[in-house]
Amino acid sequence: MKSCLTGRRGNFFIHEEKNRIAGNSFHGPPCFAVRYRNHVSFLCYNGENQSVYWMMEKTMNLLLLIFTFITNWIVSASFWALYFLFTVPFFHEELAGNYELLTERILQLSLACVLVPAVLSGTGVMQYFFVRENGGRRAAGETKMYLERLMRDICRRGMLELSDFRLYTAKADDYNAWAIGGNHITVTERLLNEFSEEEVKGILAHEVGHLQNGHSRLGLLRYGMEWFSGIIVYVYSVVTLLLAFLRWIPVLGIFIGIVNFFILIQYYFLKIFLQIPLWFFTQFGSRRNEYAADEYACGLGLGMELAVGLVHLEHIFHSGRRDWFSRLFDDHPDIPSRLERIRKILMERERGSSAG
Image (tube, rainbow, N blue to C red; front, top):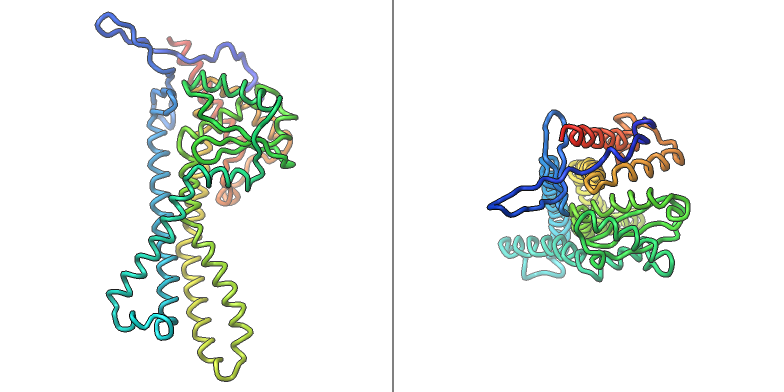
């Protein structure tokens, strides 16, 4: 594995197609051929991956978004249905017996609880809030100049504008970097201090891949859709705890027991049949997104730099290959699997360049 990643870097380059139309030269975006599971795709990186695999990944993310919406809408609608079941006689007498109006009210509230946080999560203010919440602070001084210098080369390769990105650092005691929203990238100071310039550049290219492929925006949308479901879980936990103390009151004991029964049934039904499958589906989609971001970095000609950075991480954590059961619970592929995928892409590029 190590020899594959430390081969002659000069042999890896992007083959540019030049089409001549009516005597005029047209310089297209950097392209190269990649074989994935016996399918050969012509990958072009002009900020947007045009491969078949890219289309598969986009379809998966769209399905994940739809599944997230449906799941959290059902959770929200069930919560409001249970709420009105016990409160209509006391606080909403206008809804008593009017099932059409009651259904409309439940539909409106459940949709609002899913869609409003999702829309708000995509605003610039909320994105900056998420950055700050995760420890990110605007890069400044020499660190800012260092990151901008690396990003300038990445933007040149991907035909992007450096001014479109917001760069942050975090004091977390970890080797990590992450992308949020449409243009926010955070790198931990420990990674900046202990990784080489080329390694950091490869990791930044990976994070740009998440941004350019829309992974971070979709992540925020899903977070917004799931926000009220998290509130519901908290409310159920508090109510269940209170009912556990009140159920011993002689007069209210039976009523409280019935309420507690409905809450527990709904909570565990929704968790087992909706939220747990969604979680596994989300983990699977996240792993595919990591591969897509790696592929984007390779398309920029920074696959070797990313691979060396991943090897560095593997030497630190010694995570190795995970068994199939462990992979079910991870939102990232194991590093050896990512290195193997990058190696194959680089080999295909070298083979394609030799054939050209």
